[in-house]
Image 1: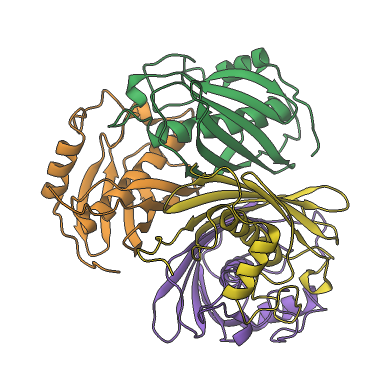
Image 2 (image 1 turned 90 degrees about the vertical axis):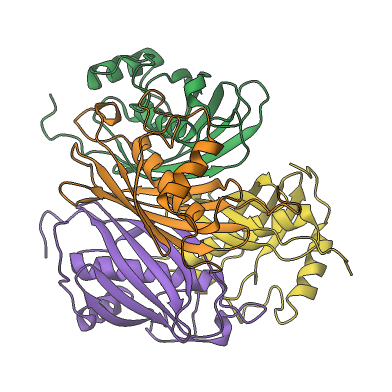
Length: 157
Length: 157
Length: 157
Length: 157
């Protein structure tokens, strides 16, 4: 892999996201299906990052479990962020494939996702996310995703 | 496959959903990450159903395209509904795996999903969904999912 | 999609494959795990091709069913070939992701695969394959795959 | 998960496989597409096993890389074996879904697969495999699979 260490800090990531997604207020609960809202970046390290989905009643399904789309969003955003942290603010990677296994119904609680880069090529990146309950530690979902990395511009700004 | 024809009508489906998910008001835009909100059932036929995601600005991403989680939700709910329409109101199937390919960025518009049962076993069902723009007809995503079907109760109520 | 019609015929495909894979004799049953051996191209049309896996006892599993890896190979080769038929002999596409659902255990028989291009971009192509028994017509597997398309050379030969 | 420790040893696994697949001689190179031929069980521990694909020229593709189907087989067999080691010789689990990401083209060498159970339910098990070169340690593929576990017989033999 061409980069084993992140080139962006959490602050750098948040700044890039704020510039790239100006219409989204991060942490704003008012537009939930427009991710990456409401997802917190906990840590970034070599090939890895950890993100967190706070507990909100609107992410619940009947029975008190957290919805599949909320878990999909957490995995997708987490893998996107760990890739972005390692390629830097050169453009927007696009999800082209996501495979998610739902393992156990989560109890109502915040979820954490450990995200890992499996491959970081010039044109494609592939990562994995494992989601588990913040309180009980139970593994609730595993996902892997493919992201297309845009070409570097010939004449960068 | 043990059932080639639906056993529930759209009305029967909606009634079952209303009884099973009493805390959700279908068509209510106030709790978007709790699906199956805001998804319309267009038609049900042998092994197939068609569902529709109306255009809402809250499903948009920067650039005006519709978000990945919104497409994931449409595919997941659509496959769930075509299975439910064919097994009847015997219990809740649970998504255990979903694989989604994002093919083209959709223009801002309503999306339709053609959903098809690929396998309907006693314990597992597998279905596919193809999502396309209602206005331009462009194929935007393809998904396949595995659903675990709960055992029939020995002493049904 | 930038090409809706194939640019290679079956004969053109076979000639390219023979030049690109000189150490493989197509149709030779002696090196089975080295695909695309023993797979016949039945037809090519717009965005589609049909391929066939002849029945061989070595593809069988206990119980007389055809092995998962044999079905994986048929799907992978079929999607690869339909892409190659539409992009022409410009280089070798590489499988980066394959998702396969095993639907029904096939009876011992030849298998056919209907393969379809879902997306044909400059850098990525995504296709689907549906496998069914030649004799009984039963759908036995469904697969979707992502292929990375090599860049066109600056100075083409 | 209902079992955190294996209930079968390598010897117990091999004995069960020999009884269940009498027509296959394990380690026999003569019927390569009929797995689980030629795959060695290296170790079994809690929720994990390690398997090995020896280097054979027949698993090669043009350019000297190991074929996709050979990697698919290693992942499928490895996840199958770790599940079997934990549920015991009660019947044959069936692969219903396999998702595989091809990360890097392997150099010609033996491959190892670290396999892990992600979920072990009564009816479904889900596992992951990570494949890497025995010599260079490079991660070459990551796969996750769903397996249907047959019901326990009412009157076991």
